[in-house]
Every structure is written in C-alpha cells, then in structure tokens.
Image 1 (tube, rainbow, N blue to C red):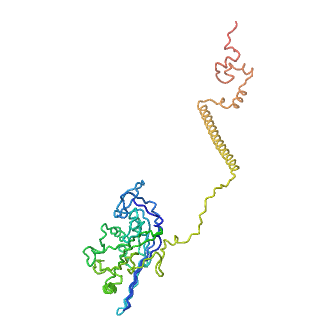
Image 2: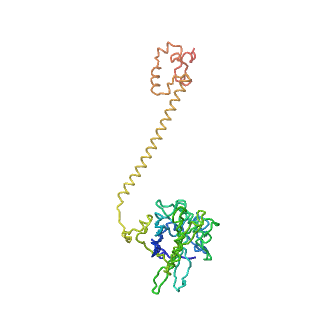
Length: 440
C-alpha cells in the first residue's frame, strides 16, 4: 500500500502548458497546437482511503460505503466520489496553408473544460533507479475517474474547435469514460488508436485525454527535481465540406516527411467516415527534448493561463497566523447571576399564583352550580325554600310569631301556624285542651 507525499503533489498544482509550433521555410506553411491544464486540489479527497492489494496504478481505488467501511473497486465499474486533484483544460490548434491555397484556420475550445477528476497513482513504495541511473524517490501517474460531476461537463459557449455533438466524445463525459478504460495497459504495448486507423469496422475512434507521469529525482545534494512525461493526441474532425478535410493528407505528408519531430497521425474513423479524424501528436518527455512539444509548469504569453474556478485560489493572501494567547480575559458576571436568580424566582411565583387563582375560580364556580341545583330541587318539591337562605328564614320566623289571644281564638296551635307541626315542635309547646286530660 503506497503513501503519497503531500509536499510533492502540492508542487504539481497550478498551470502546465504544452505547445508545438512548426513553420515551413517555403510556402508559408505553419502548424500550431497547444493545450493548457490547471491542477487544483479536490475537496472530496476527504473521502479517500487506501487498502492493500488495491493499486490505483492498476486502475483500482478504495471507496467508503455509507457506514465508512472501505472496499476496493475497479475504476471502470462506476462512479467514484473522490479524487486527488481536479483539472481544467484548454485546447487549441492553428493551420496556415500558403500558396497556392492561401487558407488560414485557427480554432480552440473557447474556454476551460472541466472539472476533470484525477487520481495521482503512486507507482511504488520504495525508491528505484530510472533507465538513466537516476535516483527516483517518488513517482505519480494520472488516473482519470468518473465522478458525479462528470456528466455535467459542458462545451464552452465560444468553442470553435468542436461542434456540440462532437464535444462529448472528444472532451466531455464520453471522453472521460474512454480514458478510464484505456489509460491502463498491463502490457504497455497497446495503442488505443490503432484499430481505428483507415477503417470503421471497429466504430468511431475513442480519443483519450492527456496522460501525465511525474518522476521526482533526488540529485547529489539531496534536492528534488521533477521529470515529466505527457502522452496526448489532440483529435480534430473536420467535415467533408471543410477545406481542411482535403488539405490534411497533404499537410500530413509534408510535415511528417520533414523529420523534425512534428507528427500528424491518421486518418481515423469518425462519424462513419474512415478519413475524417486526424490527431496532432503532442507527446513530451523532459528527459528527451528532441521533440517539438514544449511543456512548462507555467503560463505562456498569449495562451490561456488561469481558469475562473482557480482565480481566487491564486490570489496572494495577506492573512497572518498568530499564536493563540494564553491570558484569558475575566468578565464580571456576578450582577447578571443575581438578576437572573431574581427573575427565575419571580417567574416561579407568578406561575404559582396563576395556578392558585385558577384553582380558586374553579372551586367557586363549582359551589355556585351546587347552590343553584339545590334551590331548583326545593322548589320542585312544593316547599317554599325558607331554610336555603338564612336571612329569609329569619324574616319568616318573625312573621310566624303569634300572640296568646290569637292562640285562644284558634282551635289548636296547628291552626295558628297554619299547618301541621312536627313531633319535636309539639313537645316544645304548652299543653292544650286537646293534649291535656281533664283533671276531674
């Protein structure tokens, strides 16, 4: 299981520009092709993981499930949710054909294409020696991955290099998938373009995005330098009605035969036409500078430099990092605690009084209902209800007092009071003629 050096990977970030430019000394023939790529960190790298026997170099990657458990997957099997870096690319080409044609064509993508997600696969755990006896202390190779954002790749509005229906295959989501499939060759001898040369029996050519290799070399003084290798074929697909379509075979013969290191390959099948696709071979190896491609970790004047997505990240920051002070500031909170305590006590008192008041009102309401029900029942029995209201009872007693003369005029006490007396009342009254026997 390899480990990646964050310092070395950080040194690879930024803009890299590759350009090949060739002029003929006779006939005013000129060819130029270029691409710029800008690497920036992918924040989704927080979900990266690693496992033994899960080599990114061999087109595999570690993924985490919803529970955070790691597993190994093939990059060709589906969508990955992380990468090491995101890349934005810009492509362009220019063709000048002199006498007797006098044709000029300059085309580019009109903007940056991306984000493209790349894993920087570490090729080994230990230092090794290169073919030239160099002390290679670290090595990385690009491995494109398909992520959730891949399907949203769009052709820039001002693109003149490609038509909208060609963009997906050459620089869009389909190009990413083709690159994921063709970027790893166990034998190292397979040419992914060869089966499409001069024939459409295998369908349309499936172009790949640029493949990068970075070798960190340690010199005699212990300092690191980086050697870079790029493998890229910039595909152009002119239509039959385009004058370049007819000129490509002649231009290809003229420049390839000059033996100056500039190579146009093709024709490749595209759009069911075996003679439509031609590529500008933009291979580069910093160990072999005989090629026509110039590749630099920098911007080149007149060519694209920084994509909009990276403009803020490339601004110089004036933020100073200061140590955390260890002297804490004492804040007087005593009076706030007292006020808070008083507020809490008053709140509880208010709640208690409100509850008590509510209970009392409920009891009074219940007693009023009972008295009303009692009065209603007494009236229904035919009684006058004199015992239910105290002051009314007193008035009635005063009215019911009779004099002795009135008693004598009546036959009985019952007649005086106007009704029958109960047993207890009869015992309290003096005996009458009806209740006392004759002495004689």
